[in-house]
Length: 490
Image 1 (tube, rainbow, N blue to C red):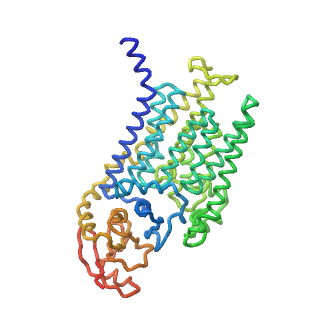
Image 2 (cartoon, one colour):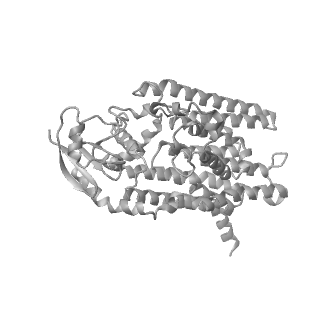
Image 3 (spheres, helix red, strand yellow):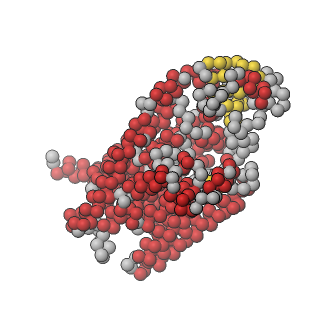
């Protein structure tokens, strides 16, 4: 090969490898989401809720979400003004599937800075392998499986902030952290921890002319995060919440009584038992290659872990499912890269080539990179991407034709009350209410016996008529493959 060709290839690698990682991640995650959507898999009501929000923003309206309750402003549930960006998306692509694709792209794009940093810190191919682990990690798979959640917008911010922290670009790190307050209220505490990490590094700076500004910047970011958190949970959320109070607390969802259920347990018991919490901590530590625990950046996971583990909701504790694990991934991998970068730094602050680093440092680095890669192989069978062959996927796909018939039966612009199964699928066409919170007499009532949760009504019309508080009368207009559609006739 000619020297010029080798030079061109060498110059292209820092761009081609991260781009390939992003592309692999995007294609894989989007393929999963499309398959999940077509197979009628509905793990929660979140996608339907955020679809109603996006639909409202697309028409320049307040994010009123009837699924949560009549006149319910979703900004009073969690503070996520950044989701106004979903308005243009819905305007162009009025389907909940578009939200799933947006989330997939946000997660995949966050691999770009992480992979590039990993390649600079390690070798191009080791960095690429770590990038693939990152973009297909347990946290991302769980988030995609759980469908859309606002937390997806935080992942790219944390990825770029992590890279800036490793590279000692403190101002850039602070600027990437600052918008996290627009994603979810508790991320103000994550910003607080980022500020403390920067301040600590400022105190460790060898050059006195750089130490003071870095420390002050870190402390300023700490105060900003704390102030934003307090203003949001004490003033903004109570003002917008239907109950006049912040619906959530560090003990769980205060509105549903779960916090009181945990009050009698000791603090340590609530944090570290049952065993699944320890498993989650172990998986997270392995994601950071174990050595990443030595980085102050790893402290950013503490607020998220605290409110999750102190909650009485069991699905908050798990490592293999749900979306809250997604924000832990850029933090943990960033902490790993921070330690790896420091292993290559001599006492004078100069970066050494790996062959010139001490043998012990190289051995520690190898272990740090190997641990998350082994974790990926060991846990692959427990994660969603390899579970798409399970029978439930085929069952859902088989019912898709019947579901389409149900949706076609509903008139555009009408109101519908239904259970979990078709909530999101009906949002583009109708104003949708959930049977668990609705007290309205809607134009249609739809029952999906597969998602009812035991003893579904045998006659949707009789059930809907009996539930009405105003004497509304319904008649059955469709009964197919476990679906029943009742239409209001008076």
